[in-house]
Length: 296
Ligand code: CP
Ligand code: NVA
Image (cartoon, rainbow, N blue to C red; front, side, top):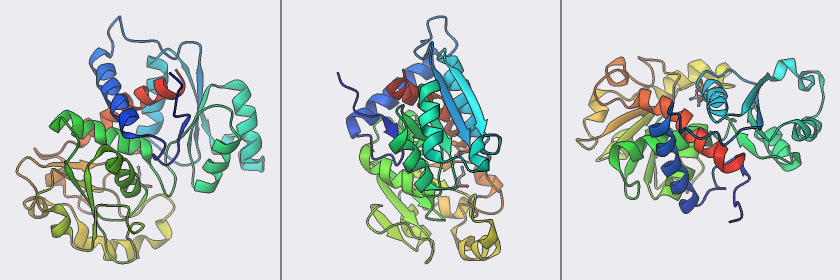
């Protein structure tokens, strides 16, 4: 069967069938992790992991994931490459394509990642840009799948900044058949029409939801606006009172890193409804399935 997907930049590359197959595979990989029979589907393959911005989860989960599948991960910081001295992203893509079998990149520029993906002759994965974080959304969908079974018809409420994580949840959630609702203040709203419900009212978004999702108020690159953001987003904290309006079975999600007391309370983050730590673990399993699809 021809491979349909060669890259994951915005999440729109995956259709529902591919997305479901990827999540099925991720669950298999999770179940067989560490077994003698665990697949070595990246044997003989190398993957460049280019980080122009800080990362804990994305970097570690990709590095471990490539290694567990028998491949060689090569972690590269932007400031240790000639990129930092003016070599173009296009030439970087040309060269990397001669050495490695796939590229994961975290960058402060969606345009740069788009150019890398256009020029590269190997699959490219977006490991976070200002506009998108599709790998995060894959792990989030995997977590919902584990907790609730079928995804179609689930209701997910994202509360806070209409940022990269919100956009990727809206895009991939829609593909999965989830009703994604976003509550953000004026000035921090997502592109119109992307979510099933786009409101300024957190309570309206959360009403009856199966999952309530928080992300930081100050994303990487937005530090100059930190104080203004903390004021604008203060009414959008995910706390016990807000969660009370969700479904009885509702879980709390956060992509991490968290700032307890800001976008989420410690009570919710560390409480019984938190699925946050499974969600972080699921980065590994979802990305291993993605690597198999693109690079294996
Ligand atoms: N959630 C996430 O992408 O975390 P890192 O920034 O640590 O990679
Ligand atoms: N929205 C956050 C996500 C971090 C994983 C950021 O872009 O910094």
